[in-house]
Image (cartoon, rainbow, N blue to C red; front, side):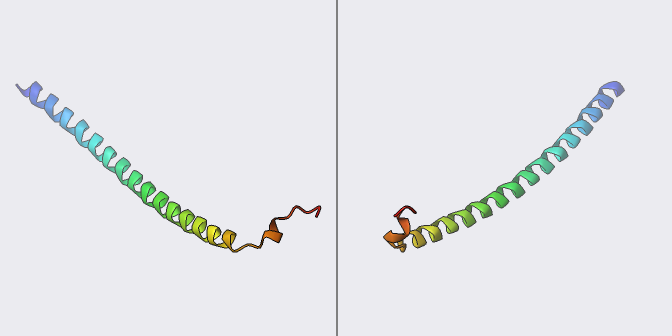
Length: 67
């Protein structure tokens, strides 16, 4: 009986360690997701700004240099 109890305690200890490692992994992944979302928003805003500026260009700006 005592050996079974020791075995269960060992398994519980390993399970707790694994759970803590998984929690750290999930936390880091959430931080990365949030950082990527911020970057995506910034790029989206930049793209919208570039689109607005592109529509206000003069057609002469688009002539090839040999003209």
